[in-house]
Image 1 (spheres, one colour):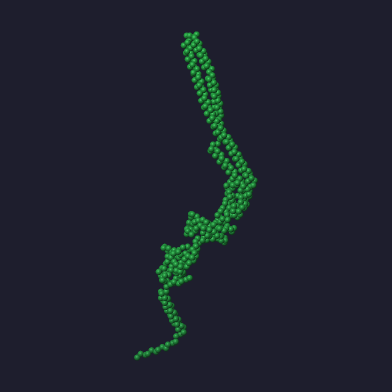
Image 2 (cartoon, rainbow, N blue to C red):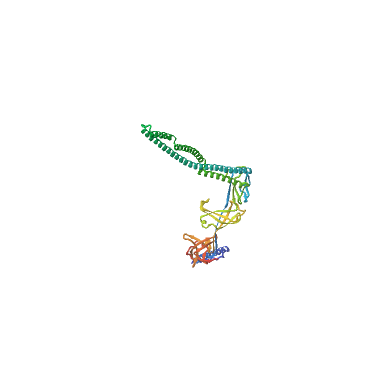
Length: 479
């Protein structure tokens, strides 16, 4: 028979060991609760919808502006050129100086200017005297030419008439002489017929008639009268021809001495040119006798006048740029170009001062800026310039391009876009949807909606990452 083992008595657990066991139990229970919490949260999360915030489409005013910067420049400038080759006396301003209208810029030497004035006056007098003398001579030549032409015509006719008359007289003389000679010949024949009867009365009569005929042929009164006339007219013809020779000489000298139409036109033109030149010189002298003065308020941007120097006519002496008519030049990109138009109001800030302006010009062609982008130049006229404006400084520009009053507006950040155009997100029956919209003008904060929304429509203010059209969401309306 086996002996029964003795039972060991249980000793009480020490406190440290007991504490360790309690900690393990507590940690185990806590871990179980954490796991249970995570599991419960995951289960709950599977049943909670994403939250989106919405706002109402409202009406309001929206203004579109283009903000940029530009350079202040003048709208009016004048270059003063030397009208005379006269020594400069004094120079009163320098480049960079601000001047007032009427202020003297520089002046010419008074003595040199007086000499130039006297020379111009003498040239004008000489030119006028030469023209007058030439025209007097020309008129004399024209008068003599007219006289010669008239006299030559008359002389030619007189010579012709006299020569014709002499020919007629010579014909009469010849006819008369022929008739007397014929009569004498007939008498001689008759005398021969009576020569056998020399004592007869007939023969004696024939001899007398022959003698009378012979005398008549030598001393016929008509022939002698006609011959005297021939001599007289031949002397006339000789005188006429001599006078005609004089008239021909007069005509030739008059023609060579008188001005033809081309020469006369040239004389008139040359005289007029010299007169204009002299008058312009005198006018220029009159304008600068008191010095060259500023035509408007402005700034001297270039000064080439030097005291004591004699400039060449046409040399630029001074350049003045107006501070009364001022503009700002800006460059706009192709994106802003469609917003800009002549007449738009502009706020211009120069050195902290704000001026009112208007778009005055939009260039018709683009240029390339330093970045290689195409830009278009725009000019803005400052309407209220003052003495605080400096040419060449930078100006901040805000162009008020357009405004829409009481239009449907939404915050600009809610506008989205894709390949089909612009859209906003809205919630319809708990579903996130896209609503296509047509936008109008926009400011930095608001955008005009012209189509696609109505006043009061609730649109999503922002869409969290991961949300897409068609998802169920919980909408929380904002203001």
